[in-house]
Length: 327
Image (tube, rainbow, N blue to C red; front, side):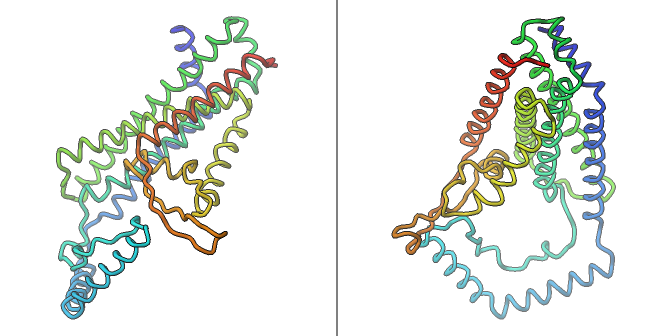
């Protein structure tokens, strides 16, 4: 098995599409660093003057109507709470304008959440492309049959390909995260930003990146398994992309259907953030009387869903690879 996995890793490295994906990841990290550098540049004297004027105006408005704004905010929160919708509650105690809000300066913590989300999206896209193309390309070239002449036991071939894809994606993800962190550090140094991350926040960031790596590795294995079933990279991308678009654009955007438990964005948000809150409407007498109810999807629930979904893909690919002719 070790020999098969090593051979598969070498073949993966020499695939043109895989190298293009790696090049795309590097370009994405460069663009992310450039974007952060542009957004976090120190404000010019003219911009500082505009920010100071904006703060004075906001401060004057707060002194004139601050208590009224707080009262209206609390009343709106109370109304939403009574209606069962606690997703969009506002922190009414933070409405007062602060000088720090108008300094135009950024800190490391400003970028961490954006960095995490962008890195997750890039890694998941790369993982699915790597997993799907690694298997589908061999079916397209007809080399699966030749490989079975060398190793006729299909279970070992199937397991070695999935394991190689997972290990390769994990290594790519580690390098990608290292590049993202290095780019952030370079931006901090160039723009003289304040590193305000605490030890707890640094540990949380490390755990977030580790969870992203785990999800990307699992996604690449599931994509490779789907490629065994469909035998086409485009078919795998169509299945994944179609499901993502349908779930985000229709199924989970209609609160009356109650289908948030199968939405990709909801599970991804819960996995990355720890939980995801959403609102469902319980209706009686048709849709004439509907009551909103707030629900919370937790990270363990999202992890279980991703695990079961990937397991289903793996079993489907294995079954079809076992019973179908490879030519």
